[in-house]
Length: 359
Image 1: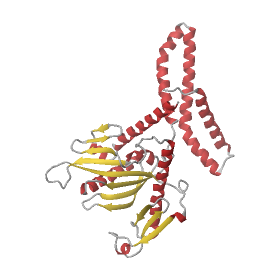
Image 2 (image 1 turned 30 degrees about the vertical axis):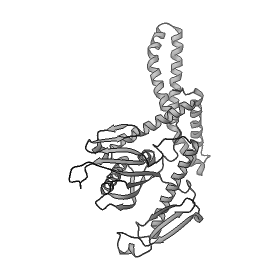
Image 3 (image 1 turned 135 degrees about the horizontal axis):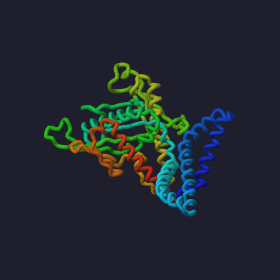
Image 4 (image 1 turned 90 degrees about the vertical axis):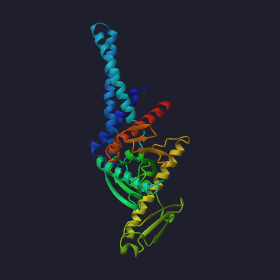
């Protein structure tokens, strides 16, 4: 493990002091003040821990001086040194984690897409179970969930459901859910008691803002048409449904949930912007490292990431080989946090390893 240099700690502490001074001086306003406020919030925990670590380094130097001086004080210093060394090692790890590069999308809201995969009606039912799990997890985290569109399964659940999740750190936690989720259980419609295997795909996209992705009007083709399905007579007799195609990429999204054409257009644009933003994020990731194979945060839905085995009451995440025998609590929502925290810790460990290899 690489030691954090005193110079690096001093630079962090000094930068935080500068930002703090500029904010309190009253000389900065407008957008500049907003940028400083954001930097202050990001630097504060790191600067606080850097000060503590710098103080611990000074204490260790004093103990070394006492040990060299000899006598009774040297014996006391020698006894205290191992405890201080462990304290410093723990603090260094905390600072190294705080200094890891941040995902620019971590603070964004989420667009969650859950779709039934292989398994017919049971897959749709499982997709519904997953979505409700995320709803309850969001409630546990204090986030807000708003359904954008939904296509219900014939025997319950959803063929597809798309929703917004609003809340602090939503994408930072939810991004690890992207992928193929597999369920093993006896369906309610199974008369022979046989265990079936079904799947659903989950996509977690950071909600993009206008500043994140620029979309030219000339690059869009907007089609309106008469919506189909349930919704009442007024839904089916007006051209309220909207399909937007991004011509350069061929990416198309459609919305027909609302009776208002304008509301459907706005919802479709939000979804299109998020998908284009995710494409751009993945392109940048690929350019940074052509050999990058980290599927945890990439949103690659071609890989089975987790199995929910109901007969055994277990939930296994295959990316980190973690099995928890508390499936009922996970499906209920709050216990999903244990799985998410394990994935976040593993991701941090991988980033730290990459950082050490680069030194």
